[in-house]
Length: 244
Image 1 (cartoon, rainbow, N blue to C red):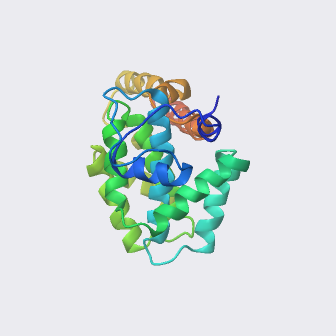
Image 2 (cartoon, rainbow, N blue to C red):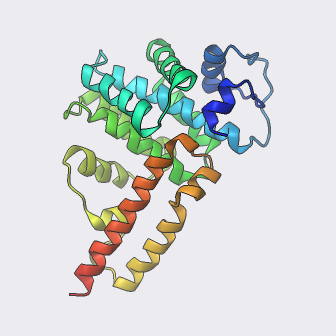
């Protein structure tokens, strides 16, 4: 069963505190409150739900960062909901309600992102997917507003990433170019065998099934596949270069 399908069907078997718990509770009308007890060992369903809620909350903060939600940003959100995540009916309503509530609430971008980082600290690659989606929205109108840039530049620190990942994603979504070495986290100075080892490790880590088992919502399977293909293509291009 998909994450959102299980949620709106009333199969809610979790409670956790923090801004994400309050946001989800306000949308689904659950009994979660400030007195809810955090489970010491949240299950994968909890992680997937937190990811999804944090994603639409942070997308809302990115969209509102320049003072208004533009038509290009609305179109991108619609594309996420209808095509990238294939949500409809109650699933669609849930995503839109999370976005709308977070857009106007007093909770900071950092607060939502930090709680997700804590919940998914064992799955940094799921957080990479999250970061890429934020970049996609920020660049929806082809321009990175200074306020959007500030938020995006805070993400590596919150998630415990190297600052280099910001440069990599700006090149991909802002400049519309790709550095195959950056995609793999390799350098031109490395021998091909070293690059191959990095590729095999990254390929395992970003396999869609692995990401979903670690907390990525099933609804984001297509995005996970895109990342997996990107890694494969980068390796194949570098293989051509090194075999010349």
